[in-house]
Length: 125
Image 1: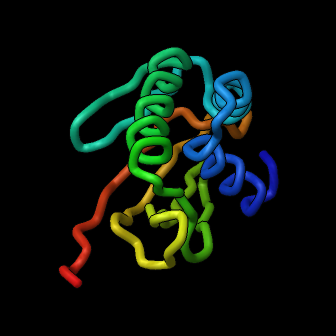
Image 2: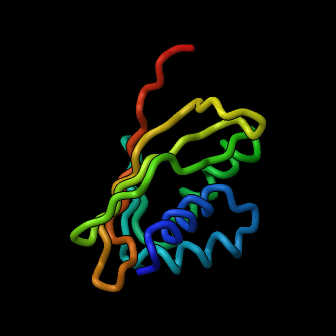
Image 3: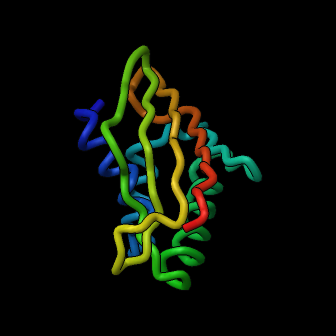
């Protein structure tokens, strides 16, 4: 596995990546072929479904919404698991409109096998 800062930076970058080919490369590098990405409302199984999930989020939130995704805090890693915080912010602001936690279980090669994305409720401003 890459060092944790590089791993999280690459994972986070896929959600902001404009180039579809580059997104595909990142997904192939980070996720195992039989990986599953979970949110509270969907499951994406395998590279093709994860690519669809990432593309849909990119189009909805980055292209249409004008947001960017950033990591928050320091990532934690132990026993082939990774946890880190994320935030979605307008491009021109540091005020998050959504935030949460990503929790991943890695395979023996250090690639993501199970990817759980949690979204927190933010207090009204």
